[in-house]
Image (cartoon, rainbow, N blue to C red; front, side):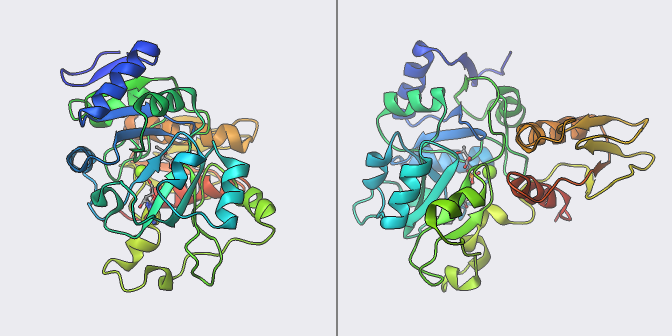
Length: 333
Ligand code: TXA
Ligand code: MG
């Protein structure tokens, strides 16, 4: 793989991990794989590095970042864990779950990374390269998905290059991501009323979380945002309608593709002459999640102006897939 000057792509071996950790220490921007999607990492305590990160992504500065840490002990140094938070961390970390918790008064993470909030989103990723990088760096690494703001999340180093070449220092190549959709985000802030709240469906199905908690997750409400000026963004910034947006129009729940459309199929596809990609010919939601963003990108890159998407079941990982598809279909601003 070739990159423009300024963005190196290194196969994620031991030497590359050391190089990446050193780049983070110097305030650099390093894209790395997690089990969900590729993240764009910066030293969480380095305000300038974080400013560069927002600039590289073209992300609105009020959208807070997830702090990635090596283990739950490191997470406890950043945030206050109640009994439910401890339970979820024990059950699902490392893994595709992000917890939004009250930050500790002595939390060293830069305010810019938290967009000025009193809460902090934290996760312990379950990917060999991500874990090696966090171990080598030795501190929290903030990492949004490694795409330009408003584009789909990257699941391969090539996706990261397509969006960020020349804008970041380094890409660690650890191959394609196993899960393929972002982490599930649950807030435990003692509000709404006291119930853990599902802020973003993602790679960990809500049913599994509810089984561990022993009760249902709440849905976000306006009260969660308090008096914050950008109430909707604060409640569920990852749920903004324009967040996941291919260039092509997207038509959902389409059983019959029309002339001129490209088809994003799921399961048995109808006969069709146009460009077709299948999320999972055998109707497997895990396989479909892993293919979602690359197929959307590929159909977009094929020059299709409209993508017909076959129905995907609303269960398990299907919730996250349908959530992302609904965003991709939202009218562009
Ligand atoms: O799987 C993932 O979560 C990936 C990988 C790289 O870890 N990361 C990711 O980050 O998806 P990002 O920045 O693209 O999405 C994180 C979402 C954003 O919508 C952000 O606004 C929200 O989490 N978030 C972060 N801190 C928050 C907080 N304190 N309260 C509410 N939402 C928060
Ligand atoms: Mg993102």
